[in-house]
Length: 134
Image (cartoon, rainbow, N blue to C red):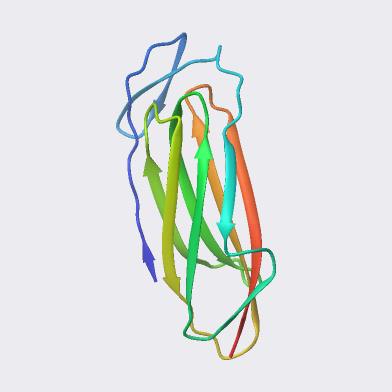
């Protein structure tokens, strides 16, 4: 199991500040537009076999993105199988892609959650559930 940890910091114009990571992130509270997350693959309740690679593809759009994450969670025990963090200041369109091979001994349900935040601290979230069979 691999986990990535990234400290975020940024300086973008705006009206308020909060500490983010080891630097200052400048928030833009006049931004009230929520990022729109689309997951193309996998599809809801898609079935995989043990040893298959789950390929997560999609896009997020907004008037100015800040950061995001893709997380694969085992529904039975809440364990995070994979988490990928992104820092993408100012992008208005970002195509994401992540691959993870999953091995199971019993049929297992997983949730894939994609979340992105903009500089107005608006969060766009989309999740899909998948099944992995032995």
